[in-house]
Image (cartoon, rainbow, N blue to C red; front, side, top):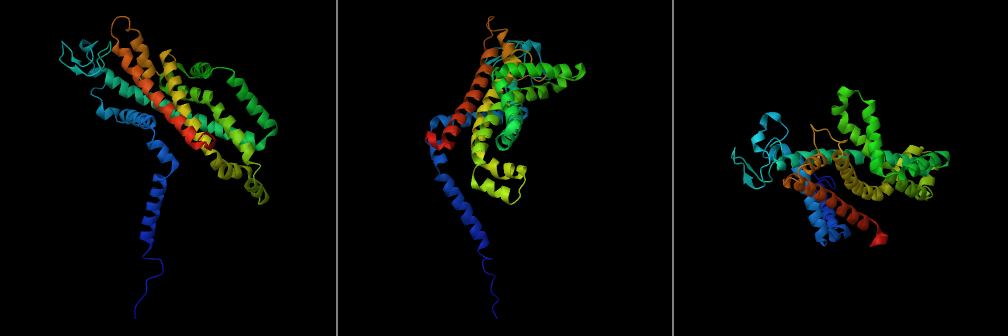
Length: 324
């Protein structure tokens, strides 16, 4: 007697493969992919950003030298010009060296790590805070909405870099002197995050006020779902589009804010220099002819911020049907 295979048992792997294939085909035929591949500017900007991120992540492995290890520095290599070997030591440097003999290419790769880390974590902090406050403000309304939005309005009257600088100074003052250098990066992250949450909150509040009037929210109230369950499980997924756009654009602003604070000497410590710190060092020698110390970190910061901004603008256009 033949034993028949349970219905659908042999077809499961084929079904999964067909489902994966159909998902890939839908993505390849989607408007997002078509818009991406038909825009050379977006392709170049995304590849530039990916290259910079890989360079930062892999900096301990691909950097020619260890620039911030005092034991490996040689002052004789100082002020070596780009694409040349030092006349005293014979060491070759693609982008030259700074006043302390540090390889500029290696300092840029390690500086990228700090700039990207601060920017990404600060945006995640700002996004979390802004989304939570925006959901509460838009869904609860009343006096809570009034307090949150008045705080947001007051903060928007000041430039974000001024707010970040003020918060950074307050944070550093509250930390014991012996821990300030260790906590400087985290104080910088919190300061930038607190200066960037307003855009997230205002956008999420507006979208939440629209969503809370729809039938699925009223149905959730009727069946006894809690406010947090409705906000996080039902309203939040419907407002993720604007959040992603703001997060992308805010990443560029956070990177620039970090570079500005570090350039002014109130950001990353000298033991963990970022791109802003490197630009500040190069500024001191621009008039004496060592132009490469300033030029290459500045170009790296420009490429990083510009690539993120262009990608954010494209994402905003593709996720907003009114702009198509």
